[in-house]
Image (cartoon, rainbow, N blue to C red; front, side):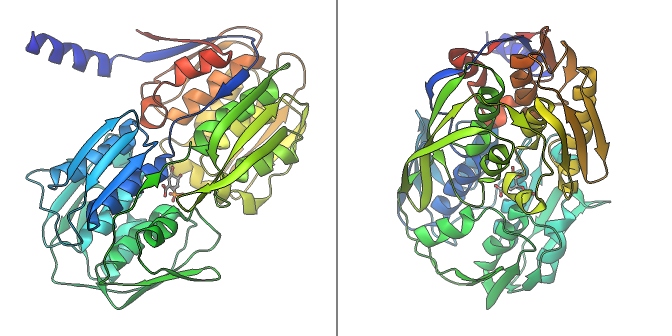
Amino acid sequence: MRPFSLVKGILLSVRNLRFVADNGGQLTGTLRVPGDKSISHRSIMLGSLAEGVTRISGFLEGDDSLATLRAFRRMGVRIEGPVGGEVTVHGVGMHGLKGPDSSLDLGNSGTSMRLMSGLLAGQGFDATLVGDSSLSGRPMKRVTDPLASMGAVIETRPGGTAPLRIRSVKALRGIDYDMPVASAQVKSCLLLAGLYAEGETCIREPAPTRDHTERMLQGFGYEVRRDGSRVCLSGGGTLKACDIDVPADVSSAAFFLVGASIAEGSDLTLEHVGMNPTRDGVINILRLMGADIDVSNEREVGGEPVADLRVRSAPLKGIRIPEDQVPLAIDEFPVLFVAAACAEGETVLTGAEELRVKESDRIQVMADGLVALGVDARPTPDGIVIRGGTDRASFGGGHVDSHGDHRIAMAFTMAALRANAPISIDNCANVNTSFPGFVDLARGAGCRVSAEHD
Ligand code: S3P
């Protein structure tokens, strides 16, 4: 029995998971998308290093955050759950982690690898971080270079990619670092290394990026100082366990914000959505395009703002996307390109070269898919130009490849709402990294999508 299920498991993971999205439909009702991925990762990391027991609710049970959870279990942290989004982390304190007996596999998760490289750089043990083929091709020098100036010793493959072999060192030194790219992962990595460094660690960001690490550190009682674009902390402190209520992920809500905006007759409410001002670019950009989004029931849970969002279909117009919104909507561009294809006139994105080094090259992969569906989409080195159409059908039907990128698979599922024939999308298994249950939730709201294995 066991060998058979093992073989079956391997077969399922290598077989293509295809989404087939029939054209048409509208989105209605009320739903809550799964928990925020960024906050879920950080809740495991800080909960593990804290003194005491951290209780997490609304934890994202997706492959990425589960990869982080398993990695900390392998370093000796007792973690119960997740059961229905509830996780209990029995913190081991700042110096209580144990060296893992073999490599830590972080799958597709860039956040796990970049944040953990900082957190592990100052431990008294060696650790090796590995990932899947997408993660093994993503740039890691952005974290290993500044970590090296803090005294960390990390070996990479030539070209600076994973596996990352982190060697135990005597001590790290604080750093005063001007980040060349606006990256929350780099900032968070260095802040986590800074917890173990002598003296002060300060990071300056060229543009605001998500600040969940800073907020959560403060929630765990660690002093973090912000002065304009600089954030600083001093090493050597301790974290006190606390309870964390993870809001619904605005990056997952984004698919439904766009879907309901473009599908005529839609009226959808999304509950308990994280509204952190460093993540709200998708709402600002959609509103500039003419979207009808009502924000209500604004409140704060565990140091993070949340609200309910009601979105009704509305005619969209093309815009030049303000560059200051790019880091605030960095994960939402695949689905924003779908909105642009349904908007009157031209949408121009610039200053977004980072999209080329996400789980896939999101500019090229989206442009290829849009063109395959008959959209006028022209990629540029740092963005894209999309000429939209407000006809009932802005997309032809056809076949696209998500290249194993979860957000591209979900973006094209929403495109089917405004297509004149079904869209089939290949390589969708990684939707589970950030949005387990996507197909069922999308169907419940009105998408005509189903999943099948080749
Ligand atoms: C994340 C930061 C962003 C984002 C990623 C999650 C985080 O990456 O794209 O999905 O949790 O810190 P960058 O910091 O590389 O922009």
